[in-house]
Image (cartoon, rainbow, N blue to C red; front, side, top):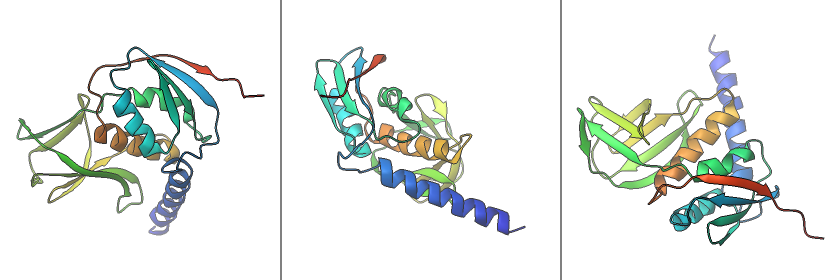
Length: 192
């Protein structure tokens, strides 16, 4: 009976490592298609650029259009939309909103081997009465330890779970200062 969680955990760990090695911190060596992402405004260009840096994806701006080379991994089609997510975290204690600063954020594996988003905040967190919402959506708290909160990620596949956990960390670490939406994503023809 113990073999199933161990095998599942090892499989999730393998998927997590493979995805992180190919997508996160690739130092601009993305090998996927290049696309032009047209946003409704360039007001969030610096925050979006910081998100790209976290992803290790190269991109250049021309007005409100971002030319972006994707990593070439499954789920790349979701990157433009993920860049436009506001990333606003609200922490409440017994229903009262708290002013918090995020000191660190990252993806970690839970004790069951599932990727989670881990945030270190600047306040001590109680285990009871704590709630976290991101962009108005209540999050499932996996665990709380002093100033750290682990948020569960849910998805149909291990790749989806890992991408959600990583996207959430990047979005919250670099919240957008204004509302933007993706107007269109157009492929850039390869250079001759």
